Length: 222
Image 1 (tube, rainbow, N blue to C red):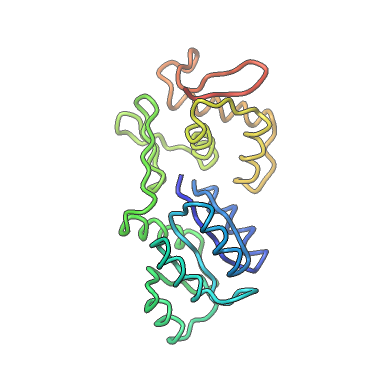
Image 2 (cartoon, rainbow, N blue to C red):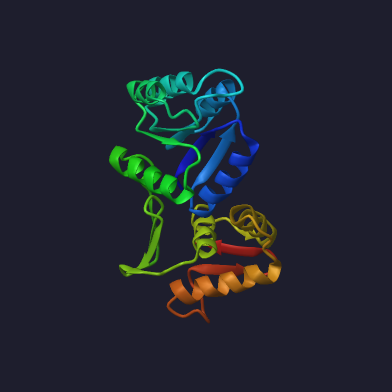
């Protein structure tokens, strides 16, 4: 799964953007300032950073310079500063892209995927039997044909694939899906989505071999 470091000090933006990006299949770690961003980068391997310029402590420019020098991380600036100086300064530091607030979330996702594609970062193709998931393109196919998964079906499949071999309890799946969807997902809804996903990826949904049920616990992908 593509991992994104979001450096932003506006709680409303952090909440809405994190939820949207997670729904699109990204893993997001959000921090409010320079010190927290550098600490997070030292502990976790990220595929891309989204940086605001004005932070609670320090500057997005400083964070960008450090992330580039230490980790070679692709950077997209998110900022209300639309002046020419800020744009040029960001690119001079090596930023791959720059998008001014307010921005359209889907445009941002398109730019993220474009940067990942151009830099070769975060590419991860996952396989499950004859099913292939490209987490950069956000696609899921079987025998080369698009499965047309909904956002929640895609998120559910990613959760199972990135925890391959582990049993994920219904409680864990509900918590993760609720977080990604930004709305309440009930136990009955989870059952429905498991069935829908099996209908699309299994050769015989009545005798599933890809998504196994562990009775009384949850589900597992071998």
